[in-house]
Amino acid sequence: MNRGIALGLGAYLLWGLFPLYFRMLHRVPALELVAHRVVWSMVVLAIGMVASRKRRSFLRDFASYRILSFHFLTSVLIGANWLLYVWGVNAGRVVECSLGYFLNPLVSIGLGVLVLRERLRPAQWVGVGLAAAGVVYLASRTGAIPWLSIALALSFGIYGLLKKRAPLGSFDGLLLETMLLSPFALGWIAWREMTPTGPMHLATSLEWTLVVGTGIVTTVPLLMFSAATRRVPLSWMGFLQYVTPTMQFLIGVVVFKEAFGPTRLHGFALVWTGLVVTMLDGIHLMFTRSMKRQDSL
Image 1 (tube, rainbow, N blue to C red):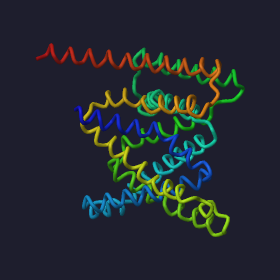
Image 2 (image 1 turned 120 degrees about the vertical axis):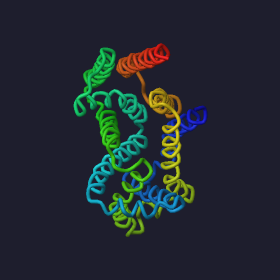
Image 3 (image 1 turned 30 degrees about the vertical axis):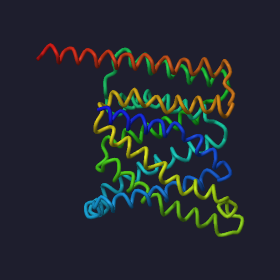
């Protein structure tokens, strides 16, 4: 289990450093950058698939209309999430992006109620209610709905919900998703680069290296995360996931000096309190179940 925790923590730490990586590519337009991320991620994943000798089973899955249509929907969601995130980081809205990923677990709980008809425990209702209150507070005090945070939380939350029912595993699923997005990504890149003023014509060698590297920085933490979920209980992974938005929040405030006045502090505090209530409820539930198992032995 220690190896699993190390892999999970490593994945969340790498995701937490994403703002620093993508900020170095701030001169590349967000849509251009995401298109390259899709293509280079597909290349890395395809190499991994060939190395694992799973070509025959993957080609069989690729021929299924049901699998293709399902993963086309998930590909749209993950593509939209990537685009929103990259745009937010390079627009100087890292703190707002971090709020989206703080909200994500609570959005997932809410989707479970609305879509899967799950029943919430009282503490979960309190957690979701506090998060909603935090968003309403920020909207009322700033005069603007934190749409980026909400869009990030919803796109990734719905993506996660669909992936629970996905016919393919995480690796094969992401490979298929990037393959489905790649024709659009390649078409966009080709259209943009047809003129001498195309964004990547003006890119430095470092920027080109970083753009190609998006394939690696996308797939490596995902593979670490997938390996961790096979070794560590999901409840533990749920606690580890807060490492990523916490790091992104600190990078936004400390490194990028984004504004974080009293209004944002109060709104974030409501969301953080909701998360703490939900986490404590989860810990209590784990402890109670553990005690019941011991009593039954």
